[in-house]
Length: 161
Ligand code: ADP
View (cartoon, rainbow, N blue to C red):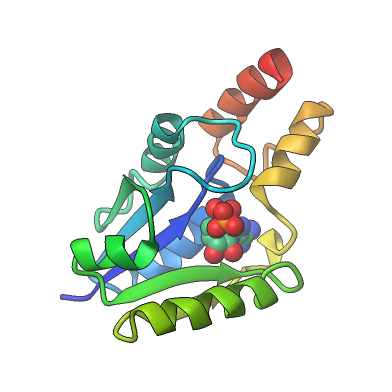
């Protein structure tokens, strides 16, 4: 049984993330979306909220689960017996940073294999941070996240930020 972890901040989950999880779920026996509890970026949603939104987003994918983690992803991957780590690559934004992290993770744990999925064309320019910015300026984000995420963002970004 091949278990894969798909780590990130997911603040909040977007259709780009869901697309990667859906495609990965067809290739691996089990996917664990691993929500990093303390990323260095400023968060809008708590860890519990990010886990809750992501869980709802992959509700129809029976082999995908969502769990929060702290510390290094290589330690979490070992804990859950994952042999693969999944990441999504957008055309311009991700490559260098991903390459850097991949080299470091390989040094820390040579047994964990990284598999990157190219972002789908529709979501190449979609990031959680841009999404929050658009939402805060009252832009339409309906095609970019599930409806319950639109509601959660509007509640948070428009009333509390
Ligand atoms: P980070 O890991 O930098 O906190 P995220 O939590 O937003 O970023 O993303 C988690 C993973 O999903 C990363 O591998 C990221 O590149 C990928 N990802 C983010 N947005 C998209 C998208 N629109 N399409 C494909 N992959 C994406």
